[in-house]
Image (tube, rainbow, N blue to C red; front, side, top):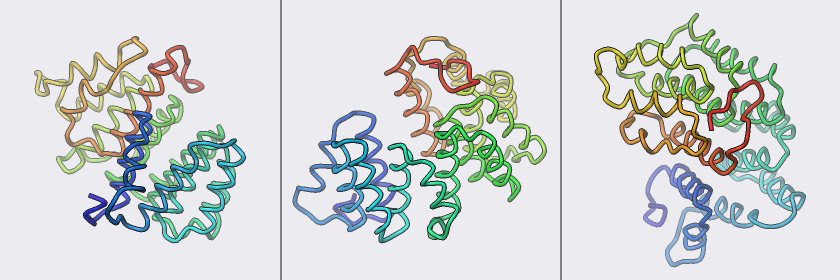
Length: 274
């Protein structure tokens, strides 16, 4: 799609990089950069950075990404580089950028997603909750709920998830067909964070737990309540076609990491979910 000049290049770039992260195979990225055919400039710059930061010391990779962020030509380049800086141990610098003039070039959704992730990495739990409250104060909507759910799947914390649900009880998201994907994201957020009662409550809102109205509910319940460390959400994801892609990525990455470290106790204050 990138070679054919399809719209929404950032989405295709993220898909390619996510696949590399999950499989450990850089072949597709390398073929796009070295093969015939033109790809968008933003794809070439971001994929080149991803390739160039596969190797080198932590300091070297941080410097490469920092220079890239400072010279970012568009919002997606800045978004990607700030996310990489968080992963490389520079989360406090990312928060400083987001709170300054540099963060203004990002869409509010992207800016808040980056800030929440950075706060979790830094273990700034008070600020994380403050941001969650600030986001929900702007109004409860499907994108807002998806943003928070994806974050708390990427960075599980049972206390923060319970806090978010408490705020949603005050300003609930209507259980309509248009909001189905966001409510499914909340089910997954509750499951990852060990909030089984809340997971079942959300399923009840969707009508899943009444009279077997949703055949996959049993598989989802079994998956999240299970104790086997190496679990694969692919057993139920195909049935959740309404689940936002960002949440699919978050679930896949979370359980991939858990499978690679089955003895990990998980996030502080969070019961092990594999």
